[in-house]
Amino acid sequence: MYFLAKFIGPVLGFIYEFTGNYGLSIILLTVLIKLILFPLSIKQVSSTNKISKLQPQLKKLQEKYKDDKETLNKKTMELYSENGANPLSGCLPLLIQMPILFGLFGVLRMPETYVFSGNLEAVKLATETSFLWLGSLSQPDTLSNIISSGPSWLLALPGIFPIISSISTYFSMSMNGSAQQGGNQMKAFSYMMPLMILWLGATFASGLMLYWTVSNVFQIGQQVLIPKLTKED
Image (tube, rainbow, N blue to C red; front, side, top):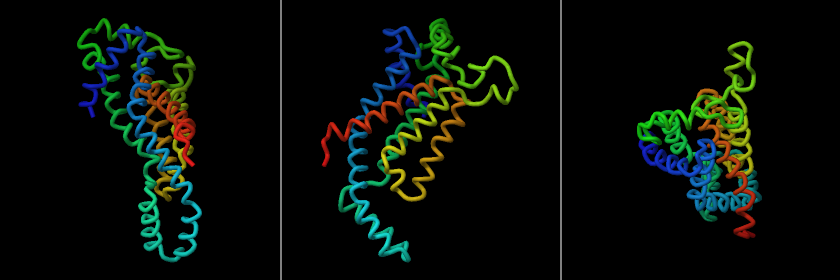
């Protein structure tokens, strides 16, 4: 996904020219990406609401065809299709964000290439400046940023941002409801995704976890506000 870094990097660099703060620039970039994806979020919430309204009919189908899984799956998909609902839509924003996440991974891994066009002095000034409890946004956020001494295995455990990212990912997926209504596979995904974020968060640049955390918080806010804005019955 490094080809996306060629587009994301200059945008991050442009924002940084105005803010002079690498962490704040990542936050503003995150908000910009979420605003671009906002129409998709509206569609996702709308589809999720439709699925919620179909629950009584789905339960009837499950009772009627409890001994015939093949027919149950067929009738369930027919019901979804007739009502314009998509059980996968709840996880779609997360899936679409994955290429962006990998693109941003390339940007934060090689800012001298994608953000600052070879200006090593600017790279050092931006990436090595502390942000909150982090000494550098180019390094992973582990417990070593909080605990100064201890066993190496303890210091290497995920820090604050990976933990917050994991928790916010779980709540974001749980709030939309589709993951819980999409069958066992989608339920498993709603648990596996946060664990994956927690595990990867201890190895990825902390700037990447900053992006993911802000993105999730923004997503949760959208899931609360969109139904009120669209005024769906």
